[in-house]
Length: 233
Length: 233
DNA sequence: ATCGCTAATATGTGATCACAAATATTAACA
DNA sequence: TGTTAATATTTGTGATCACATATTAGCGAT
Image (cartoon, rainbow over all chains, first blue to last red; front, side, top):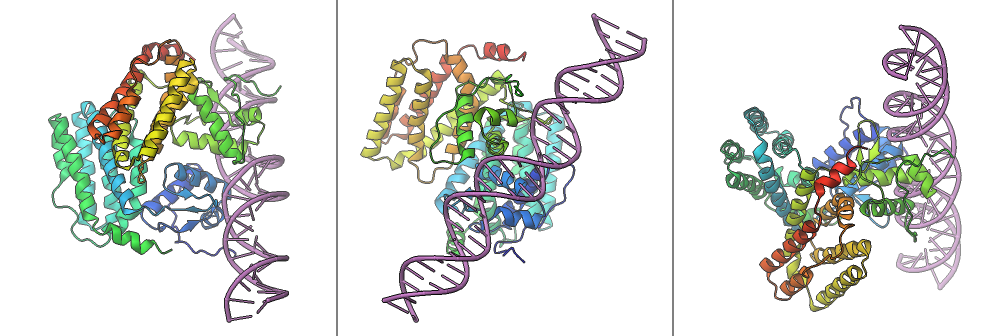
């Protein structure tokens, strides 16, 4: 048993006809987002390669890509780990998220059609279903799909990659913070957003997105506590 | 002569004690920013590796990093090229630039000291010197250094990487657009920004940054023309 | 001369190997 | 027993190799 498996295990999702490095990337990404790989824990190229039964090469590329998205950090010691962000940085990321998403939503607004709005409604139903079933992981994913679909409507969209990066940095902590809650949604901000899109009301749309993000933030209570819990290691 | 050297040649900057892949990354980045590598032209891993006299490995990693910053695009054909952005996307990027930079500047505002302001003044002088000497490349770089220094003052800063990404996407086109101008600066917005920082006036600072970026945009006249010129190939 | 097919080449991808630096382990000494 | 030096192992980095696919060149038929 040459590997020491100190860090959290990473369950693998099935692959299709995609590249190996892309598959490794998606696998790591999912495990980071779901908090499976605990923030602060170290990763090694060879370790991941062995767990996923591939050569170190695609793992290197996947980790480098994640590093440039700030999903992992490569220290000067050449050690790789999921960054442990401070409460202040956490707030800064949420602020940036609001800034980017309201901007993206407003830019996408002129491009919606009835058909696209219908698709958006379907995505919102997915979110509700997942949360109703108590599946936080699926709900979070469905929520992202809803937001992503909105911003994608802008044909000249340029900030979705950055939004995804923010999601990725926030992901693990949101997960940890949400894992102790029962009721997730008080009021459906998504419906507010859809209504604003129907009426082509940019201001209302911005307000809906902002409120939706704030609702999410309000559910994450003890950010400082999470930080302290993870800090020692 | 096995390589066909169809794309623009890439002059190399000297390396220090950094990694090879980091050196390759910086070299490519600089050449993209300066428009040396023309938007739309194809790049090959082996071609770059040969030009830089390194193995394909670090080139692969550098290109992948650039791809995740949207500085190059990897098509489904697995062909790599510097993306040719449409005038609409160009505007969207400038809009995003304003959004991110005003946000970053405002967040950095509380952290300035007299000493840092002095450093900022020195950086502004560098910009003026470069433009006075007619060196567009150096001026552009100095200008970026000025902006970067401002945003770096925020200890919880999270959006500088995204700003850098926008700069990188805009870079080649700004260069092409600027290459035909004589007078580059009408009024020094940097001094306005410094004054706003001294007075800790967030609103004035935002206005200064916004104006600075708009001034830069106004100098790029025929974006559509540039796009058409580059489109055929 | 132009179109279509086949062979040759180029290219990205992934694996294996070699090496240097950093970390962990062990041994020796006070 | 605690501290330091020497050794061993781990790990990231870069190079080379093998392979599948995409592109291009070459060539023959219409």
